[in-house]
Length: 199
Image (cartoon, rainbow, N blue to C red; front, side):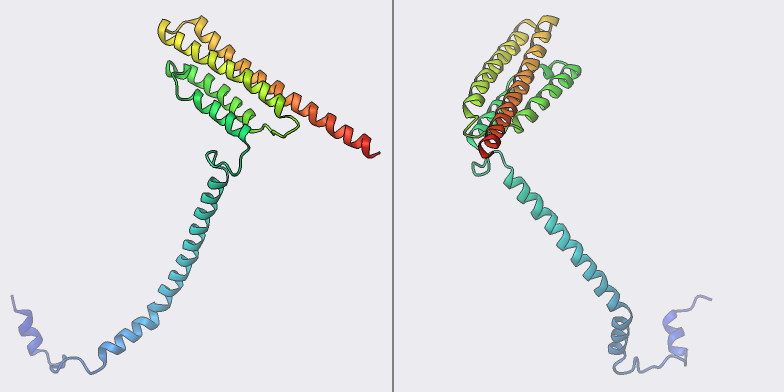
């Protein structure tokens, strides 16, 4: 029963012995292109639109990052750069969050609020003196916070040190809230003066 397949093909009279007809391969390729070539072109065009959309998303994201980059001096006023440098010094030293996850959560919440308040400050020539005075007080609180952190490292974690650090964070947040209120009052008084002058 075991027969060689080559012998079977030689003996089969239904298979032409001269091979394939001329142009068979060209006709076969034409049929393939006719049936399947259009689908691949449609897929390629669909992928082209997806690629274009992806490139646009990346360009928009990069442009947004470059426009809001705190390191570029073109989009920020000097006072905001000072506020960012004050905030950056907070993260380079030993912090309360290094000792416990609960302390980290408390400190992160306060620092996020402080950073948000700093970012929302609108510094103009009219309120620059007030902002500078408050920033000086904020810098003193930052130095006190660093000193308290150093004490925490030296003496270890205890309730007094932790409470002092949390109070310092609360004082900084309160100071920024007061600054924001003062700036709003100043802006309202200036706008009311402008309205009375125009009447």
